[in-house]
Length: 259
Image (tube, rainbow, N blue to C red; front, side, top):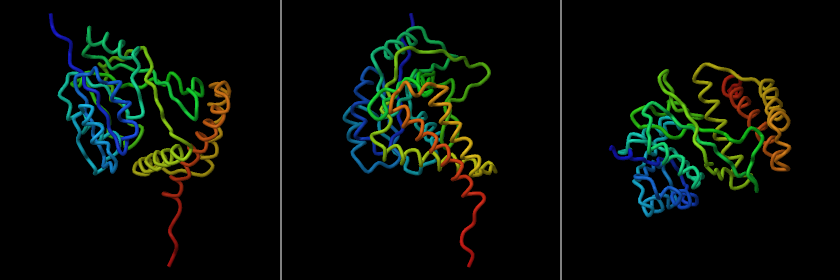
């Protein structure tokens, strides 16, 4: 009888000391924890190493996809579980993962339902739940693509997907400023990626996509059932959508001052 394959929890982080301890406390059952830092100035290293994690640094930020590839390259275990510092593995999710490892499938990537806490409540509508993310797979099977942002696990024609049960809790934004800063960073990376592909944007596109985003989240996906937080999140998401296209328009269709 073969033994259970080993499992590594892998994180990419920057200045996450405030979150890391609570996150890693929900991972004390895995065989290995790998943390790849992108240049923290807080105590992320000390917190990670105190929890028994193997800590590495790559401060030359290559984008989310490539950073995840570099982190996976440090893994010794057979399987990879991706977790972000602002996420927590519930006991139910742990049990689901352990059931997979007890009868592993070498050709399958597993998705995890993620439940986000935003501005004082868990968001169960707005299209935010179950928000399944592909996070568990055999290390030899696959990895992330090279995308600067919104990176994805690569799925070849012979790779299957299956669903795990049990939520991954996501404490995504500390406050409104944190949301705006994080959203601006994603928008800039999105616009840069589109610009590199030769794409252009317009303010009209931004308005249309922003309005569409609000209507989809608040009405079609029942964001109104999430109360005031659902309304605020729908408005902020519409704003973030507009900003992406505005950023792309500024990059591609405007010019600096003429001397």
